[in-house]
Structure formats: structure tokens, C-alpha cells
Figure (cartoon, rainbow, N blue to C red):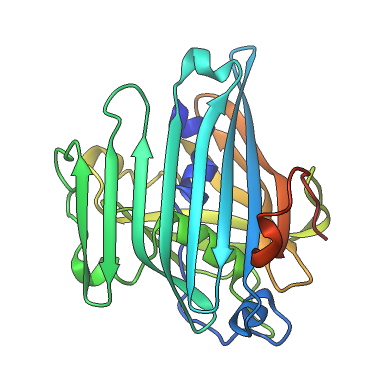
Length: 297
């Protein structure tokens, strides 16, 4: 149930997005170009989730604090259920990622996931280099899937946090599909490819942004690291019927940030995530600014 409620956040932000096939040079005037030119930035981003369990609303929230410097980055995230959802599920995760900025995109060097679900409370530590990865899980996984991810496969992917932020911030080449992809994600065990299909444009209104957004439909390939009973080829995204619908805000700084994500699930019906907070601020002055969920257009 907890994965159903936050499936989109867990798939797009916490179980899911990574780098595209190419790493284009940052377009002049894009956010990544400005960061590379010596203007470190901070991105504050929050997603709220809402679903119905029987007749009782269940809610969740995923927050991201991204610090971008010319050659390095860090991302910190929290995902949790809130309000009445705690009656049914206990989902509380803290995640962190760090790495390098290369060619206008981000590449994982380290990733830590700490889950406090009241059961296993598993901590996963992932270290990635150009030639491979190491992973330590406490408590250990019973197995690493059938088949497990190989070193060669894993190093082509990014961790879930870096994946989401890379997808949002990487510049799109002129004339390229704004939905991007394919997207490769590795969380230390599971390797997943997400495929994006452009479905046109739609008007979106969220607390953080309103306007004409780009609609992308997301389907999933489970490449490695899954148990045999998880490899249902009719499953697009775990627990989700049909493609997940993601709406991107094309921002003036060159970003394409998901501001609404909608999924029809088998057990709790429609789950909707929408951006609650979305803002960019200079990194050197961000610490002095407090409060306020500013909007971005």
C-alpha cells in the first residue's frame, strides 16, 4: 500500500528517473549553463500525493533540496506519509545523493537510502565509479534479483534522486522531444528503464506552477534486480494500471520539472502527485532566506 500511495514519487523520484542517452551541452541561458558559469544554485522542490483508501483520504509528501555547483552537486530528500495515511501505512524515508556535473548533466558518485517503515528499517549505501559500483545494505537483501544487475549495466544508470533531478534540469537539444528518455535508474539492487512518450500538451494548475504543460506517458522495463514474482510483463509500473501520466512545466531557465503526476492504481484508485513548492535561488544567499513556498513560471 505504501508503494501504491507514493508510486510516482518512489518511481520518478525514489525508484525512478535517470539520464538520457546523450548528455547535451547546456544551452546558453539554461540553468545548468549558468551553474557551470559560476552561479551555484539551490532548487527547492516538494510533491504532495493524495489517494483514497476506502472513504478515508491518504496523503504523502516528497521533498527535495538540491545544491548545484559548477562541478559537483548534492541532493537531500524526505518521503513520508502524513495525516490519516499513518493509520494504514508507515512510510518514512530519508535519502541523499551526491556526484559530479559532466557535460550539463549529473552523474552519481554516492547514494544513501534509509527507510524507517517499522519493519526492516533498511539502510542502503551505494558508491558508483566509472568502472563499477559497490553496495552495502543493512539488513542485507535476501537476494539481488533474478538476474542481478551487472557492473556494466549499473554504471550506465543514476540513482533515483539524481535521476529525477537530472531529468528535470538537463537541457533539451533544439528540436528534441521534451519528454526525453529512455531513462535508466539503479537503486543499489533494482535496475529499471523508463520510457517516455510525448502525449501533447495540457493545461495544469498546481500550487507551485500553472500553465500549459507537456504531457508525457511513462512505462517501465524491469531490467535486473527484481524477484521472479515481480517480473510481470503486463505491469507497466508496479501496482499501476496503464501508463503513468506526468506533466512537465517548461520553465524559462531551461528546466522541465514535473508539476503533476497521475496514476490509476489497482488497489486505491487514482493517485495524484502535484508540485507544492518549486523555486530556484542563488546558493550563496539561500541560507539567509527563510519560509515561503514561492512559485516558478
